Each structure stands twice: as structure tokens, then as C-alpha cells.
Amino acid sequence: MSFFHEPVMCKEVLASLGCRPGGVYVDGTVGGGGHARAILEQTAPDGLLIGIDRDSDALRASEKKLQSFGRRKILLKGNFADIGKLLTNLNIEKVDGILLDLGVSSHQLDAGDRGFSFSSDGPLDMRMDQDSRYSACDLVNLSSENELRKIIKAYGEEPMAGRITRAILTKRAAVPIRTTRELADVIYHAVPAAYRQRRIHPATRTFQAIRIAVNDELSNLRTAILNGTDMLKRGGRFSIISFHSLEDRIVKEAFRAAQKGCTCPPDLPVCNCKGEPKLNVITKRQVYPGTDEVDSNPRARSARLRTAERR
Image 1 (cartoon, rainbow, N blue to C red):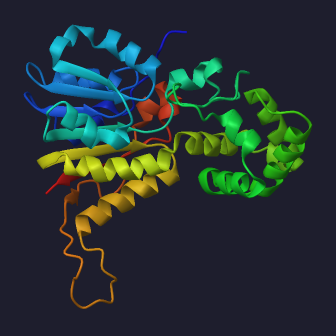
Image 2 (cartoon, rainbow, N blue to C red):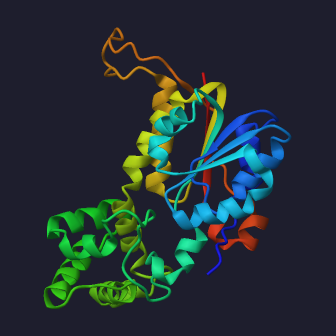
């Protein structure tokens, strides 16, 4: 399967980052290279783009898409949580902008052998980095009942987490659950009939939860915001596109905390932590894609963009 991923809110991203010629920008989730290409075009003739991704398929696709930009782009396999270390290894001290486009690419969703979606049957995988050992199959078949329920409830915000967890344990006691279709079927029959008639498939939230846990997405996001902020020049921009409330909440709270600086309890009369503000929040509210974009790319409908600027 060829790698195709439509970049979300490209115009909004370029505006939020304030892309300019000669600037140094990081795309921490380079994917198929859509946002990266737009940034390189906007920063011509001498801007530099560092593209990072955990997915080897994505890096191969972006290398092909960005080939014409030559040495103006550097592509690295890695986790955006390690952005500080990755940039230091390139002898880059500070950058003008950082973009994170969170979530799953269209390629990952559509490629059945990656196991991210139940729309087609495939191995229960969900690893963004296929060199990592821990897969969704391991999580589903080896986690304790308490661990599995917590993951589905917290990361999927799934009200039926208890019923779904018990159904998974019953099924795996007889035979391991190894494919996306098998897991989706277990979940479908675990929930009440009325729950199956809702707009989204009853397995959607559980699949999201398992994917987040397998890839440690929320912890990596928190670390990336902290490390990325320290790598920004004064006036540098940090833009993050999220696709569900858990991610967006982390981004909003992390940006606000970096803007406040002080971490002392609110009832303490004098600051003791000596924390200094590092960011100014640019987007007081989320920026959403326009109706034309959602009409042409339905997967963009849940995207929301937040931006902060280094002080």
C-alpha cells in the first residue's frame, strides 16, 4: 500500500508557526511529509526542516516526498519526546518553531497489517514504531483485569470499560485474541444492544485506549512539550494538533502551566519555587478546520490546533 496522509489545517499551521525564510523548524510527527513540505516551501530559499517520526514507513514516504528539497531537510527516526536530545545530536541549540500533529495517520489506519483499525482484519499490533516489542496483542492478552479496565476507562473514556474488560478476559481464557476483527467482535457482543446502535462503533473507544497505552502517547506528549519548549528561541512558536479530548487537555494545561511559571500552591503568599514563565499562549481557544476542509477530508473534523510562543 502506498503511503498517503492528507495534512490537516495546513494554512492554519503555517500561520501559527509564523514560518519565514531562514528559519529552523521541527515537524515532530513528519508522517508522509505534507506539513513538512508546506513549511519548506514557506521558508524557501534557506529554511531548514527537521522531520521526526517513530514509523519507518512514514520516514520512507516523507523522504520520497521531500527529496527535491535536498539538504534543507533532515529526517530522523525517533520519538518526539526526545526532541532535545535529537536536536543536540545535530548541534542545533534552538529552533524557530515546532509542530506536533498527534494521532494516527491515514496510512496507519488503512493498512490492515498495522492493526490500528477494525475496519479490515489484521494482526492486533498498533505499534507506531514497529521495532518496539510491546504490541496491542501483548496488552490485550497479558494485562491484568485491573490494568486493562483502567486503560479502557481512562484512555478511551469508555463507560462500558468493566463489561468490555470482563468479556476480553473470558475470551482470552479460551483462546488468545490475535486479530483486530476478533477483538472488535468481543467488544461488540459485550455491550448492550442499545449501545451498538450509537453513531460510532462500540469498539472505537477501546481501540483508541489500547493504541494510546501501547505507544505511551500521553506521557510522551507531556515530555515533548517540556523538552520542546526549552529548545525554542525567544519568539519561537509551538503548535500542536490534537484529535481527542485527552490530548487537547494535556496541551492546554501544559501551555497554561508554562505561561504561569510558578507551581506553588495558590494559597501561598510568596513564590518559593522560583519558576519563571516560559510561554505565552497565542490561541486562547482551539482553532478548528474550516467546513470546506472537513467536507473534503472527513478525518479532519475532530482536529483542533493550539499554539504558544516562547518568552
